[in-house]
Image (cartoon, rainbow, N blue to C red; front, side):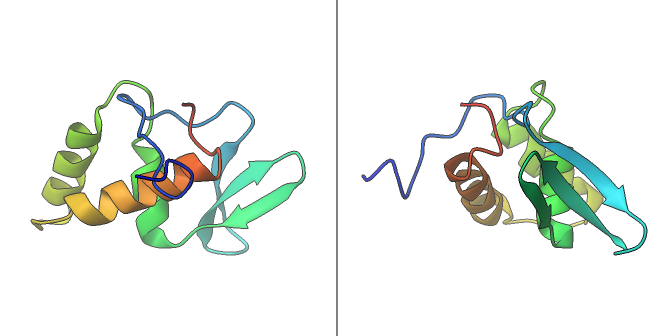
Length: 93
């Protein structure tokens, strides 16, 4: 497995301290701010990253989202998004 394209997920995902997640009223969405700019997030990415507080496991995050949205089978999508966030250094390794 190529760890560059499929990075190992942190046990307790937490936003990298170089990034700040906040809601931007003007854009009606969450954004990820960092020293060089901003990333506009879609609703799914926002919901996942809001739960990355360093206290929840990936399983906890999946369970919370499945409960919140009364859904099942979200694990693959959540893991995929977290892998991309890890690859982009949005999460602490």
